[in-house]
Length: 201
Image 1: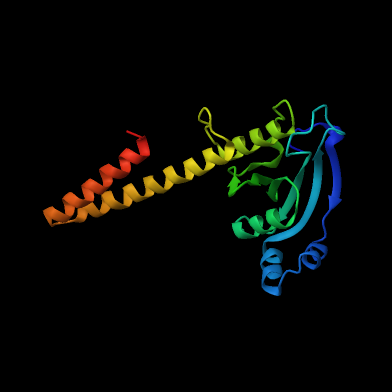
Image 2: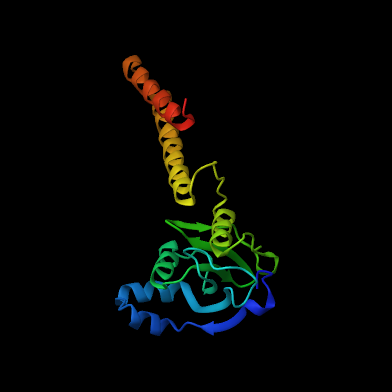
């Protein structure tokens, strides 16, 4: 799967009932997952024993988890829950019929657009598993790394920028609709301040 080396392939089903029991999930949480997900299977293991790559400082291995969905309009919270309760680095393939999207949780859930499953590939780029794992996150999250930033710093920075852009758009809409010159001026001042923060002027 994903064009990964053949010797990384495996097929280990993760029974949902066992997960529910192990993590003592309540009925509501179980029902939500059951509504969206039909089965979970580990289909690849990326580790030094399977590919010619060194362990990373924090990433010793990671797995590809095939999440078979019952429908496309799944609740993202269920994917986050699965990510959090399985104590491994997991690259998830969210598959519905012949289409899939990649997902990874790293401070937040990141997903690629839907594609035909057979067209999705992942390249293992990096000198060790830390670098490979980070590159996968960067690829899925479409993160543009600024020089000197860690992955966590870049994600936080991108989130902050997205919030500012949203706030600017909201204030610009308010300013266009505002009739009172004083209030309009105040809104424009706020917009300019946010734009300064956004573009670091």
